[in-house]
Image (cartoon, rainbow, N blue to C red):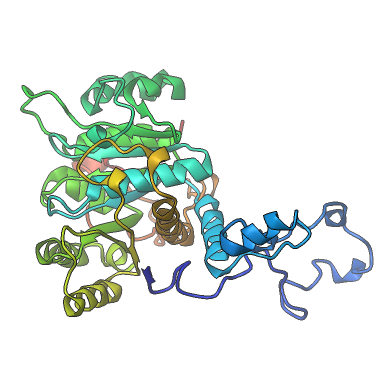
Length: 396
């Protein structure tokens, strides 16, 4: 179920439809040569994704029974699912960061992070990475199907200088756990003797590497919203995903987090996608309606995902064994995230002003975009801020 505007809440839209006659999009680019055929006429127009014969339900059975003589089109649910797959594959641009957060333990943050990462990687063909950004030890890597190599964020940080200077995408794989869906997982610290925690500086160095090689990073966050790494994530994220269950303590924790973020990133809250997972016990109907209405009003979209034995119990998630119903619902959730990310236009490096990445623009320039509240303050004397504190990626 999706509450709000989504792929299960409205009639299918032809993503490849032709603009109506008389519209700006339908007008010829060069009216003087309107009668002259253009090179685009040499390429066949592709039909929309909803034009192929049905593969689900009675429509698919009818097609098979008649040997293809009768080929009904897809039903409403199948058509929307196909459109959701197209949305997941759409161009996002730049290194994008989706932050999955709820400070309440047991809110299915790791499950949501992995399932979104698997879905994006499977449909886009990679490169997508799930980053366990707990300040100490998280459990994301324990839920991953492939548990090797046993390297984690501190190993990556130990090689950060070399990887930044001369490293390749192949070198980076020493520190990531490649999954069958082509998703990658960056594990958090597993050393029980380590006292040092991941802070904003470490986050910046990790992000410098991940955003260089991955177009999309899905981040699993810790439970302490005042920790430096959590605050760094809140300042850098392009998209917020809020996993909840319809249990009062889980929902209240998410609501408090939204209040906290509203003080510094109201845009993140307003554009968030809420993912409602199965609870241990069904909520009373009145309470269920109240909770869904609350998050529908606070965030951009509310998506419900069903119970699946493969996702329950804290065991490693084997994506190939997930039910088809679960897989389809997670495609809808990923499509909602992709739509939000695609709506945020990120400038290409060649479109950035010449002073981008410096401590301040030239004196005559006064149109630098407003930065999030946590943007690093330049050191005294006008020296450039450390690269790990900048919002702009260092060029490769």
